[in-house]
Amino acid sequence: MSAPKPPAKGTREYNRHGLTPAKRALRTWGERAIDGRTRQGKALAAWKGALLEDLGGPEHVSAQQLTVLEMAARTKILLDGIDAWLFEQPSLVNKSKRALFAVVRERQALADSLARYMAQLGMERRARVVSLADYVIEKEETAG
Image (cartoon, rainbow, N blue to C red; front, side, top):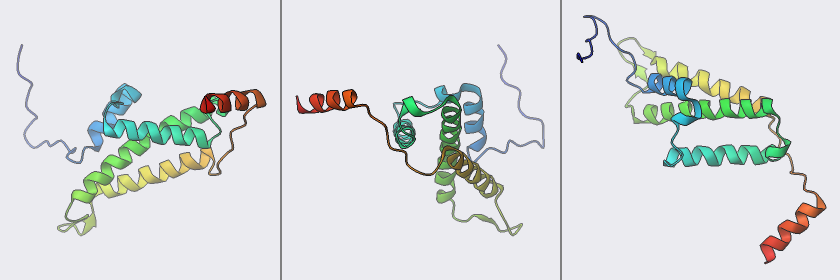
């Protein structure tokens, strides 16, 4: 087995900020790329659960809405990762070029797409409709 071939002279991988590997992992593995045992995985699951409840619960959400919810979750993961990296930087401006770093523009594009997903899902909170039988069963479980 031979060692991996080094990159050609003069080439550089532009992925120091971590966005490229994160996007590749999400594209390749989808939800399986996020370990639900980690703090970030648990926070994401809680966020998705809260959104699902805001939409009226899983029984009142269509397949299209679930797809948009999954895309919003993936976008949120990337956005949170970029935000964490950006806040560690001493400056967001490339002093030699007198311009913002490209990752700032990428972050804004992700934030805009997350806002569009949220608008597609609807910004108003929807009350969950509970039948009388379900309400009585739920009250008996909590009382006993």
